Image 1 (cartoon, one colour):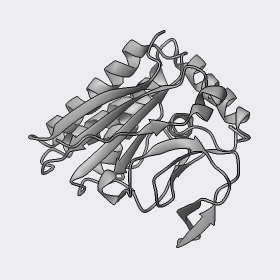
Image 2 (cartoon, helix red, strand yellow; image 1 turned 90 degrees about the vertical axis):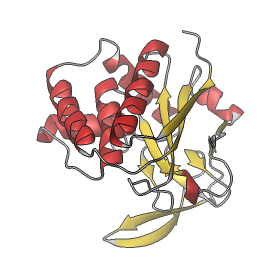
Image 3 (cartoon, helix red, strand yellow; image 1 turned 135 degrees about the horizontal axis):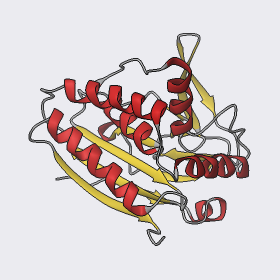
Length: 231
């Protein structure tokens, strides 16, 4: 079993005291039950429209405050969990993308937590979260065309040795490390702030692992914490 070893820059604790994340490494197996993800996403969309955990609003508000601290505008570029929630409240549902992506989006919606999924085999070196210097490359799509852009100095990024894998903390993922069900090695990161109970993060991680194991019988998952889990 391989294990991803992500690192967190000391700069992050200055921007978001109490930040912690659950890192999940997955040796994938053939996907035989895509219906697991479809059902989870449908249920999560209904859940968002009907109810949310009592701490959910405070958690999303805390993310907006953190984004402002590093110069992002949360109404224009919200954290990924808030962006998904807004789409569901507006449209009533989310379109299916890929079973693995649909599953982690369902977890994000259900638990009001940013969840990222990456094809770790596409990484050069280990993932790390840090503050950008402003010269790091990031691949994205504009007007249907793949382009390379440079991130803003001071923004929080996830990156590897080759470049940026996710801009503005968890706002937009790049193309190079994009995950889908064909990947043999997967990495997921569930990011939280103190407004969300540690027990709820653990529950979200357990739900993600259970869904992956149901979709891909034989998949092997390993989880570990990053940051302070005392709250």
